[in-house]
Amino acid sequence: MVKVADWIADRYQRLQEWAQERFADDPREAEIAKYSVLAVCVAGVGLLVLVLFWLAVTVLTAIIQGVANGVVTGGTWALEQVADWKLTEVVTTPVHAYITANAAGLPTGAEAIWSAWAVTGPILWLLCWLTGSSWSLRLAWFLYGTGSVAMVYSATPAGGRMLATGIAVLSWGVLSVFALRGIHRRPATHVHPAPPPTTALEQLRTRLDEQFSEVQTRLTSMEAAVNDQLAARRAEQHDR
Image (tube, rainbow, N blue to C red):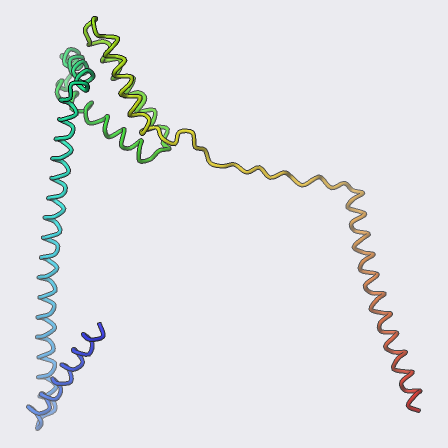
């Protein structure tokens, strides 16, 4: 910054010298020429700054869009991989079958409800894991898990119903370890004992002690004053 300021001051000094040499006979024309050159330079610098700012915003926007698209694509791919996992299909397949079988008379299609269920779980888990203290989110997570387990139990064939339900409960429990972290934490409460009550007798005794101390202080100061006077008189008699 210091070098830039020195460079600007040097160029301004040269501009003044050029204007004075070029229009030495007319100081007014020199001032006009100097400020005209300054205006052109300021306009050029301002235009350059605007162009650089526009380029920076454009590049930054493109980077943000690219990162966002990458995150969305990666997240979608990860969810698809998790959904296609055989152990995950023990839970997702019965849930999808239950939603498809019971969404016939609803205004919203079965696929829309299925997508909402698939998206709600990760969102609730992430919010519970990040906040760690919201009971409303924990209640929503509990209801979501209970509903999912109930759908798995209802739509799984009788031969593997109990096993599929157990896997659903186990999966939801493992995820709840992270979602419900910090559930035992409570703000520390410090209880300070109240001061013992003061009786009327104790108040009277305290006041008498204060008054006695005040009287003793006054007597001490009076005694010191009398001693000083006696010492002064003895000194006068000794001088005579």
